[in-house]
Length: 282
Image 1 (cartoon, helix red, strand yellow):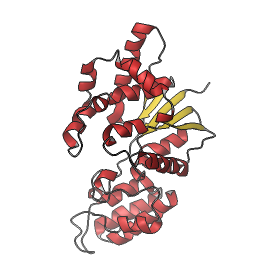
Image 2 (cartoon, helix red, strand yellow):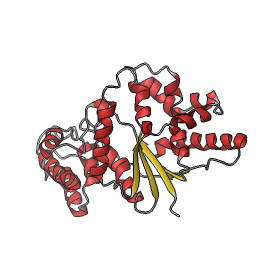
Image 3 (cartoon, one colour):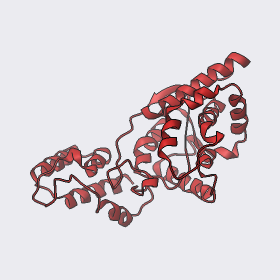
């Protein structure tokens, strides 16, 4: 029998190339050999968007469309909206009764987001208890494997601890899910920072070719290339970082890197080549 896999995404808006490279490409591969459960976790979105939840339902539809466009097949995996399954809330309540408060307060992601998110009041139990609901999402389906990036492994370790503690009280009911560390390629946004909707620097999966070019064309490059004749360093250029993820033509990539260093290729030409490869992937 195929092992069970669980993963989910918060519906905070249209998905972008970072989601495609960091998760969706891997999810599409996993559905071929595992029993996969993929959830649009709208309750998780509500934890930070509770003051204005008007867009969550529409965002769920956008996420679903992007998932299907990326290759997720409802004939090969289970796709669902978290809030449509009330048992998520029931298991969340049961787990909250056996989860020490200190586990949640020590969660590195909680500390980081409290410091970095300044425009929303996150001083509520729901945000602190985020790992409990995430554990309920995973354990409800007795998932044996959870694909995560290295930055999320701490969350999954808390899930494993919750399963062990729950079982110590009530018997061997919940399996401890195993971490499947997945490579998370660096996909910078148009301004060089991490690609994110909140930064306004994202190239969306659903963008038309013209919308995509309007974002790629003004992208920052190596600051040393002030003029067409100035040589540059591709490793200092976010356009090159995206080439490394979406351009599968190794000979062309070698030519681009060499041309950048020798000023044999201009930044606009490099961006046009990137546009062609991203369009091909789309």
